[in-house]
Length: 256
Image (cartoon, rainbow, N blue to C red; front, side, top):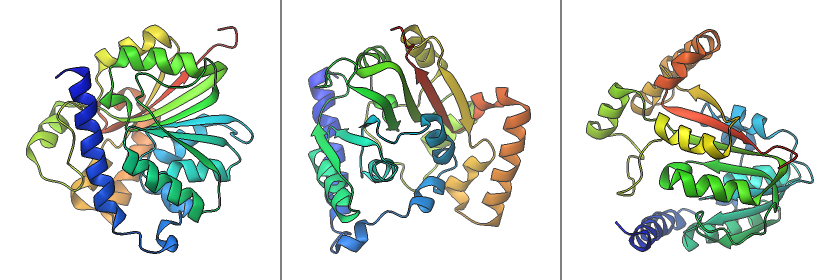
């Protein structure tokens, strides 16, 4: 698939998703964001936000903003948020969500491989499930370019080094399984490519046992598995390579 075909496929796929979602939001109240719910709806979101540190007053890029919930939460915390996405449909939803929640978010339609921003434009970059859609080499260079010296970028990404999970992803039905033809979970080889640009890259694994929640849904069993994960991964961080998701923290040196 050529780069042009990839772009067209990604835009069509996510515009279609945004169009399907649009019917749910007939009232501005439907677009309100409960911050506690958002931070805890997946186990990696709250710790990933902690990696960003204090964002008040900082220029922040929400890369691949999708529905815009993260943009709203970050703007509430005082960040000067620019939200980008390939999908015009999702940018409309993100803009509507910002308006409904009384926060200011600048929405810009952009390809993450060619960002329309100046060098060093942002002190923080946030991305949730975006890098695995991209060429790691190109994406790393663009993130590095638009990140200010001393800046931090945090990405939450599906991880692909667990062979049993990989098999389940391919064979088992589960909610939200729809994906574009060329996307795939990140693997160790992708990290090596990112680390060429960000040598200090740090990885935290999330959902080892608790990945079963994707099938069994929320409840006491899922909560118990999450409790076990927290303790297992703290004592044996190497198990992170078998997790469902990873949080990547990329730092640009102050002298860069």
